[in-house]
Image 1 (cartoon, one colour):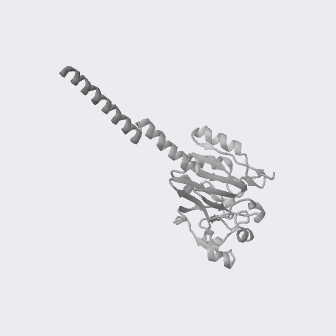
Image 2 (cartoon, rainbow, N blue to C red):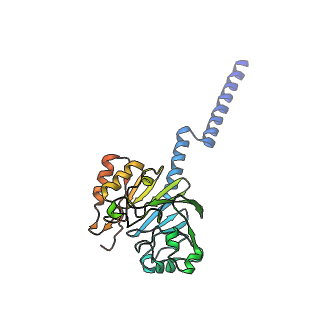
Image 3 (spheres, rainbow, N blue to C red):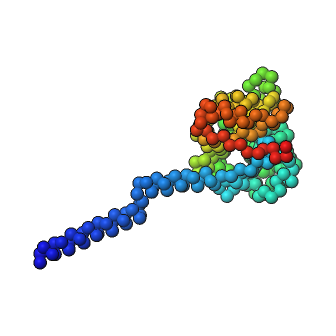
Length: 267
């Protein structure tokens, strides 16, 4: 009888151990399941970002239920079907980046307008009331986004008058660990090469105004974003060779994904 009781006790103890183990796994997950869960969460963060090229330097971003416009030009018709912007970022004073009539057409009362000082000086009085000045090297928070003004300027002697240092802004925009960089009009300046932890980089390349494809690729290989998008690549000689840009980048680093979007839909 004692032998039978002992056997039954062992069975009960084993069953309880199995139940406890399954309960722990259901609550905490195995190490592999936890890792997969973390990876899924990271993917969801990236999936929360979407960009629609409008033309050249102009784009619409949908990010964490917010809408951001970068350098809106082209009039209201260029943004037909797009949601109203929560944030607008303008990089420079040139007409392919700043158009007051377009800003007045697409902005609503709640829109925050982020600009460098040189752009603020060219805005209408009503737009100035909604504008927030962000200078090179400054970081401010707007609608939950940490936005940093990054210098953008020319290096070549023959091009230095196109974009002088301190006038315009590139931007690093960050939320929930995702860091997105827009170069604005610039060459392969040290401030670009020294960027860190960029997930998505939008890099210009057009002569004579910014830089050649080779310089853009070389800078990208220095700061190593996870993804790079060639944009702003129409120059005096037509469109820059973005296929060559991709080849140069991936010859230097296969891990950098080069994403080619259609920035010139009317060509």
